Length: 493
Image (cartoon, rainbow, N blue to C red; front, side):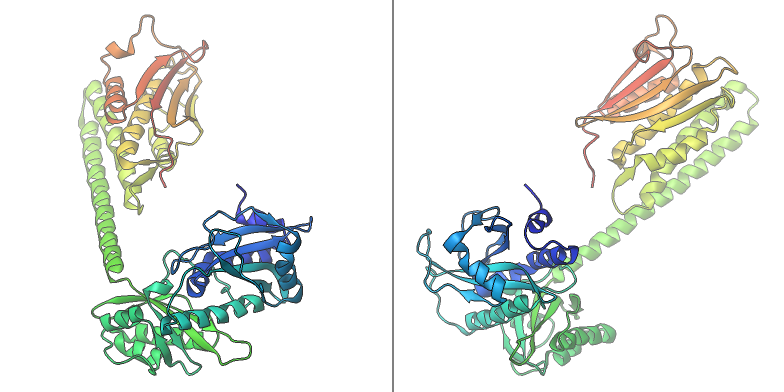
């Protein structure tokens, strides 16, 4: 299925600015559908003379009149005449007779979508005539606001120039207030009244200046003035950003939009939503996240202290084997510390393994047991893994690299050690390959009593649930160790 941008460019919305305007309309048109109690579809003309539907939205405030999927549908001939008329004349066109051909009767209005004086598409508004509602004040206000927004769509003044997050913003049913040109409330929905009651506003909102009422309800003076400025900006014809209105007892998310009638008095639409519990959970998550990152930071500091103590002890050892054992412990502890350092700076419990390895590999130096003639290179991408998997993987990789450097090459002989990351389906495959002297005859990795190999085998099989194999790299000289980790190639974000 092609994207919305690709479908738009098949019609007349060909410039990037026109495509962006149409995309912003689609991102914000749930508001218009809910206010109009109607299904909306966006249509563009094709070179063939037909019209194609490129997007569709259904109302949340009434039953749909378009249960079928319209995206990709094409119409031409008599069915396309209202589209052509609205596109040509730049004004809304209403069908004379209801459409009785579908499962429900509906009436269609076609609205041109203007942008910088040019019509780039048309918007079809289908109203379900089978749904009967009493003409309440709420419904009449909704329809009146929807009519204003349709005229703004034709004039190109709606949607706003900044892309809106429709999922997070308040919706029509959360709470709606209509303001006149003076910023006074001419209508407040029951949910809007309840929302303002929660922040301590007990007076009747009708006839009140909303900017002043909102400012007085907010505990922080600066925030109150910002909320009042947002309401005043909408009345003046601008689009302020949605913002939180935080009082002592509750928090409201407020979004204000101008209503610009071409021949009428300007006003504003204000949507509010009670987000008290949402913001409380957000703060709790931020506190928990900061605590976890502080714990990782302290663990990293403690591990670095342990590594420093082991390093001091190693310098005092006169027995070469004991000194080597302590130096290996320093390397292992330092590798784990790097993982915790990465987690301390991340807001998610995932680790960029490539970034960690780029810090760990220099700790190995020139892999001193083979001298400066041997080097390492890394190819492929490990990607991000959960912390529980990243720590044993990094430790296993460093052990394998060190073992290759220690055992693969006779002293002074040049060589190369490769670290390769590959993805096979959902699995992550890690290869440590060298071009050294290879494995001894009859060597069995499962029976090896070397500490490094035992550590790797335990980490891979027990911690990571993977497999470990060793052998010659495709019959060539050297050794290749292959770690296969099931499911570790899945994206983590």
